[in-house]
Structure formats: C-alpha cells, structure tokens
Length: 386
Image 1 (spheres, rainbow, N blue to C red):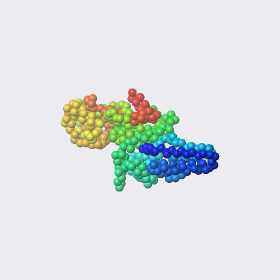
Image 2: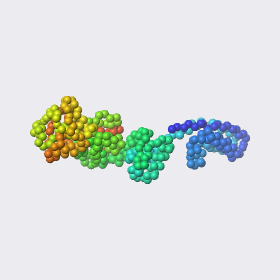
Image 3: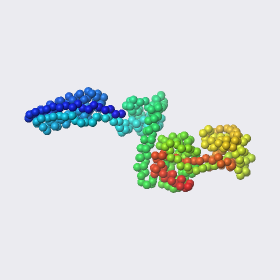
Image 4: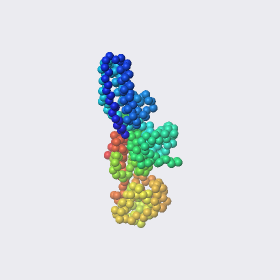
C-alpha cells in the first residue's frame, strides 16, 4: 500500500541589513512552522498524525526538515536571506514484511495447527497473545482470515490464499536454520520421510543409513494425500509415492517397480501352479482395497484391459486386515509382492500379467532438491538402485 503526499509549500522571504542572527532565526522558524502546519493539514492521514510521540512525528515531517534547514541557514548569514523551495521527493508509506512478522507468524501457526490454543503451544507463547496478534493483522489490512467457531476455526478464502504463501515462507525459514545448523559437511542431521508403503520405506531407510551412518532418518506412513500435504507444509523432506504423475512444484524421481501378486488361502486350486492367467480371476471372490488404492486401480485396469469381469466380494481399507481375511478363507486378494506378509494359512501366487505392477517414486519440493540432506538421500538410494 503506497500513499503519495503533496510536496511541502515553498516560502521565500528577504532579510536586509545587519540583523541580529537570533532574530533572523526566530522569524524564519515561525514562518516555516506555519508552512509545516499547512502541510500537515493537507495530509491528515499521514504518519504525522499516527505517531504516538508528537515530537518524534514532527521531525519526520518533510516540512519540519525544511524548517530546520532554513534555521541553520539563518544562523549562518546576517545579510540578505532567501529561502527557496526544497526539492523533496514525495513521501511514500511502504508496507514492509518485518513490521508485521509477529502477526503473520501467529497467523501461520493458527492455520497450521488448526486452533489458537494449539498455535500458542506451538509458538511457546500465551493464547491471548496469539489471538491479539491475528486480530491486529486482520484489522490493519481490513481482511477476515478465520471463521471463528465456539471450538474450532476455519480459514476464509483470503486466509487460504495467505496460508498458501506463508507455509512456504516459514518452511524456508526453518530450512535455512536447519541448513546453518548442519552446514558442517553432513556430520549430523535428520531426514524426514513420508511414505505410502511401510516395507518399501523401511528398505529405503536401511539403504540410507548404510550410506550415511551418522545421519538420522524418520519415517511416517500415510495416504498419498497426507504425504503430499505434509510435503507442501514442510513437515517432511522427502515423500515416497505410488503411481504418481507430474505435480507442479514437486521434483519426482522413479525409485522402484514392484510386482502385484495374488494371495490365496491354503487349499486353493491355484497353489502349486508356477503362475496363473489374468483370466483365471473370473468367478473368484475378490477382496479389494478401498477406492483410490493404487493396488486396486491396477487390478481393475488389468481386468478391463483383458475384458475379465471382477467379482468384488468385500472391500477393506487395511492391507493387514485383507491378509487376515484371505487366510480365514473369505476370498482372494492382491498386494504388492514386497508387502505380502507370510501369515499361517496364506499362500502367494504370481499372476502372469504385465499390468499388475506398481511404480514407486521419490519426491521433494523442487526448490529444496539441492538441499544437502535431501540430495544425500536421493543420491544414496537412487545410485544403489541404478
């Protein structure tokens, strides 16, 4: 926000003869003080009227600077004194980020944690302070950032757009501090990984620790949507995703391909066969993962491609629960081979179908791909894969 103010009023007067310097200075000061009053009257909404200290405010005014210069000139001359217009540039009120850093920091904390109390705990300050800072930010810029309920808060449209900016801003701030703390050639540091597959992420962690024993790695497992959200919020450094396409602002590197196999109960007719055809699925009771599961997507794609009807007998949103259901004889199912846990009463069968596979990829924010710790993880696990 910029506000241009009128130029100071120019004055000109002549003082002839050998007049006393003090008298000249006093006359000059009075005339220029009147100019300052006129100047302030033309711009009542300037910083001159918003400062708490009147004395400090007067000396910030361009007209008073003119007066001070004129008085200094008066003390230096006894004869003719001419005061000309000072060529001052128009005053511009600039909005600087550092002036509102604490307010925006509190907004970011509330948006990230989902509440004022949680934000206060996150920032290690009092909850009333967080509330006051956010209110001050809203009042200063005349915008509503949160819809406040009795027990929860929700971002408005303006709040959502601001949060999209601040989460990257403060994420880079934390990244800068981490970089400075770990700048001594990767002797210490922590890489945070979010993954959709526990077995594959643990294998990744093993390879990373083998290459960098002094570095630490933390792994959290969740859905693809959760991993991406945590990546964009700077809560993790690297994501491990399945069957992901191009995403704006995300650097993606292929990591591995895993075969999808069938799991059947003991005594099933497929046991003992080296492989089965995709067409053998017809008529089987299939236990599938929930909609959106990459494994389910690939199985349905393979069946559509081969025009094989799929009989979904049950839908379960847990890989472990599906394996137990198969072992108890409730049907057959499909899992990535690396994720198949050898339970009693369970057997694994290879399906002869190229479409039954899942591609996994490592990803990080494009702006962070050259960060030392992130680059170290990519180099360690991808070089070994290559």
